[in-house]
Image 1 (cartoon, rainbow, N blue to C red):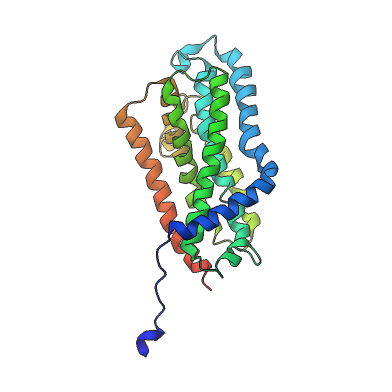
Image 2 (cartoon, rainbow, N blue to C red):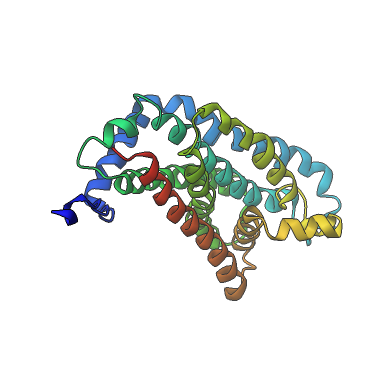
Length: 269
């Protein structure tokens, strides 16, 4: 009888049950997509047109600083990676923080056969799908504007999904612990904007001071920007590409492991 008093370890997540959580978020998105479409798709495309083409007219007469390519070809894949970062944080910050509040969808889901790990896995699949969908839309516009120089640019879509998850999983692991969902707004001021500016999106990292350059090299967005840009320009090497992928995959995996632990702690019944 004493053995029965010990808590039963939670089983591992199953795709069959996680699929129900994924379908919930997808169904909800079909009803509310207009509210996120501007942030996820329209804003990055406006950046592409205004900066990539507008500012490109000023930068193009001096292409040496960009490795001999046009500013549009330099900027567009960097913006795709940066948009994937932003979208990864958008789909994992407020949604997770609000879902765990009283009456939130997580609180309802955990009373069903879904375990916390099923809820996390299903929501993570939805996050990846959202980032990939936005990246695919961005890619179509990139190609239409002639900003891609290599067929390898199609690989930027799965890379963008990986970038998004490298940010989404650590963000979800943090957001699930918050008592006030509005706290996540600090991410956009102290994480998103600095990374936009100092990860090689708008100008080469080599143009920055040495200390800032070293800091940029350890940021996940720099790895994503560099990989997307090399794929778009057709200059990617296997060794460099695998290094970038391994870095992003490690960050996403660590974030998922920590999130799994935090989900179990917060969503216990």
